[in-house]
Length: 434
Image (spheres, rainbow, N blue to C red):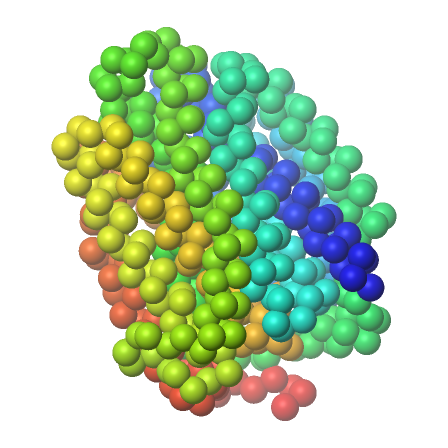
């Protein structure tokens, strides 16, 4: 059993890694695409934002589908469709067509919640934080790998990159379908499928205050991570162009390599430390650490709530630091701020999904779809805020002050109950089984 559940974790992780690589492959080539088609800063922000358009509703549907039809089938379909369209986009010469096709390829991002459900059904509560952290963190590395390596391997030839990424995705789809198993036992799989058909139960989950709070927490961690993945290559190109040129990167290809390298810092930190965040959530739980005021202290999973609360506060601090470094024109300081931001983002993402399967054990896919899906709207909104002001560096501070601080306060309020927060919400929709 141990060997088999590790195999399922590997299958889910590899599939998600490749989906993440495809998802942000457009961002890796944004300087060359912008140069080829003459895109403005506003158009660049729109292109960065478009990678997330399908994620909010798509993840909700994918979470339900994973519960209803099983993770292997659902994940295989996502890989196959995105792979085929990625191949097609490599042959496209019209920008409008390319834009539409890359929006479709970005559906790859909805695979996250499918893997979360898959892993949750194979690992026990005492190891769920580490297992989900390994899955999500290793998978998320795909964005950093894309930003760092794709421009180096393919230069400005994004067409060939898109084609090869799609071909591999088709092979992975077949592997997932053949070797993947939905759950460790048939009863669990059948029970989850039955529960997934109850839409009143789904609405009950979506309307819980703690589910909304976790969605907002994930919006300011993962939603921010994916927004930065899309935005940072263009940000460094436009916001630190003189500093990058001073380093000797003057051509479009050179700037793309430099900007992609700096952008990868945040992604690698957010990805590589996500397993550590899951481990820290497990550690807080074992040690029963509950240092924050207001937040519940006696619930079985209370320490995990405190770990997540700490992570959210640190994200706000790092965003403000990123603005200060940018206003000072201090490129090394911006990189240091990104290192810290990536680390704190990993704390938030790992901390969130160490809680989701424990709060909503009967509908892990539905809960993951809502929390992991709606939160992706942050990835749409943030690049528009970043690119919408008169100063390209101020968007980080605006986002932190006007969005993130209210999100943190709502989380503290929703996590204050000493009886299950999952019992409190908008209305009292009840699942059929209760």
